[in-house]
Amino acid sequence: MACFEGVANREEWWLAKPICKRSGAPFQLTKYIKKSRFLQITTAITYTDKDPPPFQDKFYDVRQLLDAFNLHYEQNYIPSWMNCLDESMSSWLNQYCPGFMFVPRKPHPSGNEYHSIADGDQGKPIMWCVKLQEGKDQPKDQNNNPLGFCVAAGILALHHFGVYGQALIKKRGRYWPKHVPGNEIEEHMKDKDVGYAETYKQSIDGKDFFVNCQKDTDYVTKIMSTHGLVVREDHTTYRFIGGEWKSFKYVEPMS
Image (cartoon, rainbow, N blue to C red; front, top):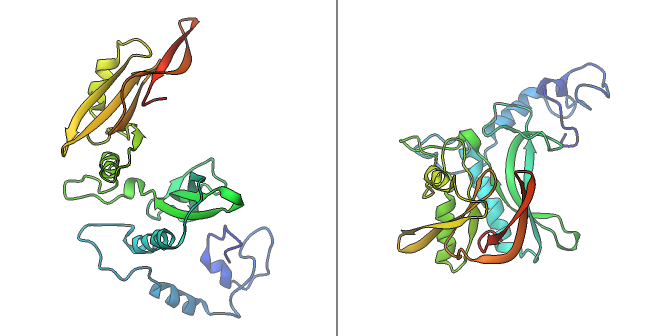
């Protein structure tokens, strides 16, 4: 069955009509299992033995399965020096499944989207970590705030383990990431020359937390990190402004 994606109506696996190559199920299950028995089995299938959380979580049924997958590879697999981080689709035919997305550029564009990382060395396409993208169905607390991953918290956690991470800051809908006064930064930088750079610095739990900013033609690039200095590098870039080419050098966090 897994080889024939696209049978939207489950009833077609038990129809008595002749097999058609252009529509319907590719073969019939009647001689193998009754439909009523099949439905009984599917209602008993579960992927978790944990109690439901005190808040609504539409992904509760699969979280333990995904955690077990990632833990298995963490404990049993050592990836090579070269890995590929990408987006993968788990195809669904039912648009009402939690986290349903439509990504036109994918071969199978409808379903759940995962951020995945795979080993890219020696031709071994081994996917060893996945993270489900929950979208609008992400659980929320009693104040309607998302309970998902906080990038700033991740950067600070990496610093705790001696890892200096950084992340490109993007506005999601109406909101900027936590600890990033994006609107104030945009207002402050709007009249600056292209290439102008400045760092917004704050202290969070005793750790220095930077939002490194550099003005571009139509936007301000923002990088959050716990490291970096706004010093000019040798990396020169060019922009076509007012009918002529102008150049500026990236600062260290952007280079």
